[in-house]
Image (cartoon, rainbow, N blue to C red):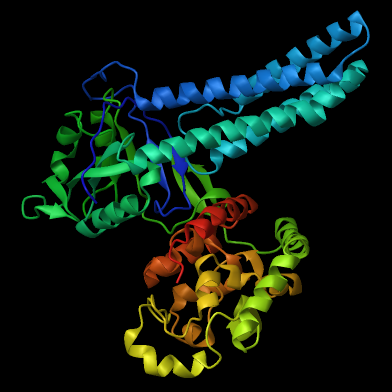
Length: 509
């Protein structure tokens, strides 16, 4: 990846716990430089920078969405009396102000969550639900019937418009970052292996906005570069290098000799520079509801709860799977029939059935549209030397067994549509790890076997992150991240990103 150019950035230090489905790595706590201590106060050059412009654009978009919803709500109501008009306008203005207040209360404009993961979207949901509930309670208490259309129509509509505006702003930002703009220059600190891993992750996920432009490693005097990133010094030189103003983030990964005292001193030294301090705790890729902070005599400890795959949320996931599969089958029935007819045009069966390994190691018969010649399984041994797959996977970029119709089906994942019957039967889920073959499971290590704790899915992190282009270790890491951090919000985010992955045909062969 070529070196990017950067403008002047101005971002404030803050405390956060961030996780992303794109592969940004383990949870990184962003630590503020304290306002008291031994550091020398410095100032960040003033000026309007892209983070401030982005936040300003989001605020304007949200306010415009609220105003449009209020105006449309008033226009559609058409009250017959002057008093009715006044009451309607008053209720509409109150609803709009309440929603704006809700967005501020849940910190939906906090730069920490803007354009990062799904936290931004969840805060908009919370603001809409909370403000609508508050307006409804006030209307119930004062016996004002005119609040109903605002609670059930106008305010959810305003929330939807806010989400659309934020989505458009995020896509614009992604386009800018794809071109190498609107990035935050990062100084990576840690062992050579840890820095190399961080560099690879940020390059795989440019949309996160980190560009590692320098590194400090214990062997700083003997190592010239890590993954083409120049090494600027050893661990003792971190504060001095960061204070020069060329970096906006100092990302500290595990390194020998890097303890709490050294980290605290670095935070003090960065005070007033506007440089964020991001710390990788070196834990598994666990985030979200499984992470808890427990203070012991003032010492904040991270507590990790065990993953659970039972209870109300899990029951809701299974309900969504069954209902969603039934609806999708009904809607796509004409397409399924057309594909079946096209596949049978070469004389073979339309469907291909294969034994796969599901939850807790139970096997099931997965069904797909046939995309290869009838005797494809018997040709595997002869083609083994040309395998392009990673680890125990067998994949070929130019597989001679694929039919002409099958090539089109595989390009757009249409061959997987019959798996909706597996979802309906309960052997698969709409979202989950990739369903493995028995021979693949036989080669699993202890880490990869954790994939089998949940039902395999028609789509998952592996599909929205590159599919067959991923290495074996990356594929395992993504599936384990899903298992360790499963939530309904993560399922929804993966399902949304699947649309772009399918139409973009990324890693499909």
